[in-house]
Length: 363
Image 1 (cartoon, rainbow, N blue to C red):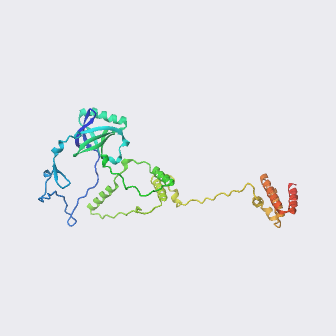
Image 2: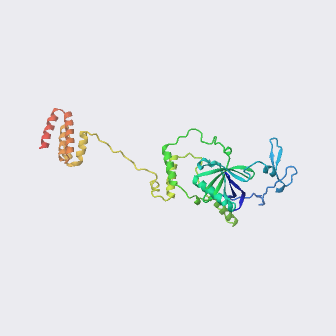
Image 3: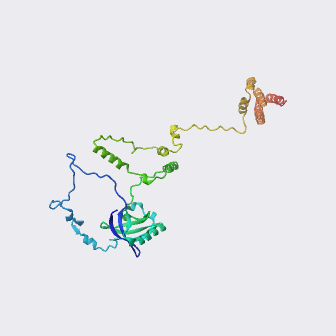
């Protein structure tokens, strides 16, 4: 790879000759401007506004425009004479934990290559020191006419440098956050956590630029004279008020389905419907005569047919007979209790009949 800058790393009293190499490259597709009428290329020409003549690159210099519009020429020699210690040096000023660097400051990335055999030893020393400390180095350097801030870290067996913006170049996020107080429920946070867990991690090497590939296919199709069919526009739901809970639930199901997890389509097959849940009716500890009759009804249907329904005393006798047909001792006790309650409410005659009924039942 071609170096774009040669200099040295200043590590205390240690100087490490290095070459600066771009660590990234831009794969974006660039377009040219053309004249729609005839397809002619539109070019930008540098023209002097005083004599209106085109000027070549060698005749162009730098100048600073003052507040009143006056141009103050600045030459490369003027800049070279500035007392700038970082003109050809990456000067390390501190070592800090990586999480102290705000990602908003990240700019271009470079690889630092040892420049020559003598640089191999100090280069390796700095690399291993960075590895063992689990820290990054903050440095200052000059590139393309201005002093910059950088961060040095280890990538594999190479020292990489990220250009950083100066802290005063980061704008405060004023007026960016949503207006007003927005409340997020725990249920919504739980679903968001579930979606994050379902999406999980990703192999960064598997990510690619789908838009660039689509543009390349478009260019190839038009170059070969093929008819390009317009792509179907999907509804992104922009600007619509949505049910956040439903959207999160659907997102979790879609993520599970895309990953082929078991049970992902269980809710889809039932159209999101849930089974009806009926609560179990609770009975009191002291059943009434009516509930006792219903219990004995299941155990002896024949007894029901032969039971007269004329008076309250006959009902008590029928209830006692039904209790006799049951094999459960607990049911007998329940029936007797119910019979006593009904007898007490039915008068003196009913009491005598119920007592005689008890004797016959016990016989």
